[in-house]
Image 1 (cartoon, one colour):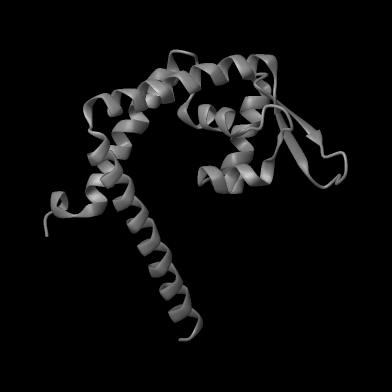
Image 2 (tube, rainbow, N blue to C red):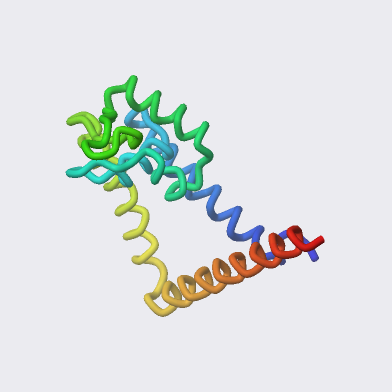
Length: 152
């Protein structure tokens, strides 16, 4: 099977193009796609526990910690202890972080609107159904893999 005949080739190739575009847009604001993603995933009113950001973003804790440190140094976020559980650190956006969040939000909207302008609703819904099936299959394959590993 040639690479272009595989499902993962098309997903990876497309995602790399999307990520490159988001990074190019973010660079015009002296930022990165990963920074924009954090800005979009922090609850603007209540803050977000730092530990919940990693799973949302698919990042390892060490990488996320480095990113949050850079964001704090750039005055995009601030950290506060949770008022009821001192072990939990909440991430809040600073006013500058809120401003940068708008740039990230606009980039996401621009990309999604551009896709929706060029891809029919039927095709897009089919794409979403297919991606959901692929994700369900991946969960099953991971369960099988871990089950086999635990029983060998």
